[in-house]
Structure formats: C-alpha cells, structure tokens
Image (cartoon, rainbow, N blue to C red):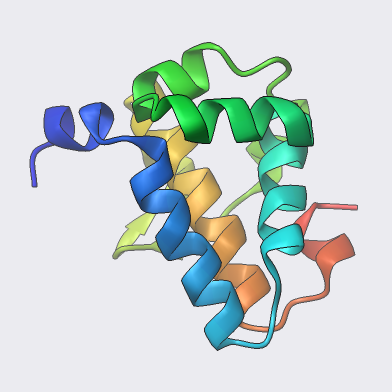
Length: 116
C-alpha cells in the first residue's frame, strides 16, 4: 500500500480495526476513544462527526483540535519501523496512533500508554 493510499483511506475504516483489536484483547471502544482524544484533542462528539463524515487520515490529523505535545515521547517499533525515526510528518502521526493502540492492546496500563 502506498503512502498516498493510506492518507486517503477513511479514518472510520481503520478505526473499526482499532476497536476490534482492542476488544479482542479485552479492552473497550472507550479506551480507543480515550487514546484518540489524548493524541488529537478530538472530543467524543467531534470524533463521532469525523467517523460519520468518513474523513481521510490527512484531514483527520490536519483538523485535529489539539495535537498532544507529549506525543514526541512515543517511541518504539511499529510495523518494523522506529516511530521516532519516521521523517514524513503525517506518517509519523499515523504510526503514533498505531503504537498507542498496540500498547493498550498488549496490556500496558493506560497511564503509561498516555505517557502520564
């Protein structure tokens, strides 16, 4: 899958996979939403609007109300790549979210996932 194709995918289509992964591992949609809110600043209502409108990843991150400044503390490997070494800004934001969801699904305490 090319970078361009990832950027134009609807966030809602991938969100379903985040929720399914969380639920398979004994977590909830609310926890997924908490991670998204922490990272992007979207409220629950704003997130529901974004999902209903099926905005793409590029728009999702471009219109995020308040990207968390602590996201730079997210480090480690996701999809075989160190997130802190990803140079392309949008791909780094996408992988930050992937990494947070993965950590939660693997049982890391939410306060650690959210870099608290």
